[in-house]
Length: 310
Ligand SMILES: [Zn+2]
Image 1 (cartoon, protein in one colour):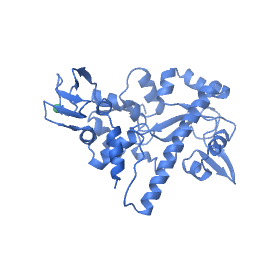
Image 2 (tube, rainbow, N blue to C red):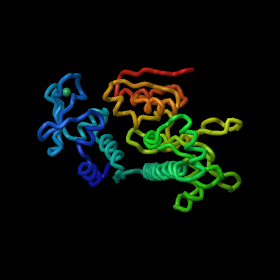
Image 3 (tube, protein in one colour):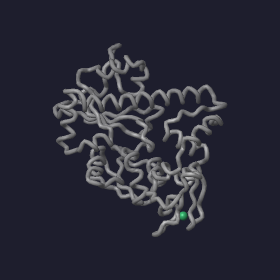
Image 4 (cartoon, rainbow, N blue to C red):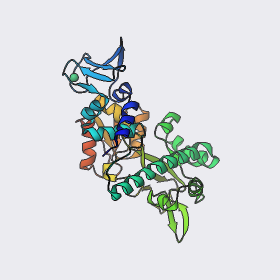
């Protein structure tokens, strides 16, 4: 169970205009904001949100409530799930009561992986933009593909330096231990020697719906190499391949607003389409579409178009 203090913290942080604004385009009208209702189909707005009162009400279909009700209704979640969703959005760590030792350990492990992945994504991003090697190899690869600066930022693209253990050294100097680095798939251990799993590769962070970094895809740049073209994070508490859709964080608003989702194969397909202004697109990243992935998309739209080129 979530501790009452944590629920209070989530409720005090959650801003209804910000959260509703994730899903619909709000327009100011007097003291309120209005939008086309996300819960029924309409041409003229009858969906009202009061930021001051923290409530929403639709005068068309009658739905109404507070920020938690909205997340429950929109994402089809139970009350505790909606609290967890909001906590995730605001990066609030929830305290739990009455948990088994296994649950406590699993959550600590998940939380450590989240923090480490966040650190790693920013390390790779900076290594690409701010080091000579990163600019010459990683950044130039993305530039050759025509990706704009704002797109590199939006998808937090990065580069892992080639020398073997730059990331490992930086991460351990910041206090991350080798076991966690290995579990996250970021570092490999060969006879006690640690080296970066993604050295010399460009990095695609894979984010949750709320922007948390769950794992990484890493693409090789040298065409003559025998190594696999892409390496992905191994399955762990955080990265569960069958539930991940690349681009969901960047695309969810557009999918919801346009009530349509395009499914493509690869990371770069998602990014290219975004750059071209098509923002309602996700990738299943090589796997065939799973039931979990379908369920995630169905929360936002029932209209799915598959665009595979194979
Ligand atoms: Zn309505």
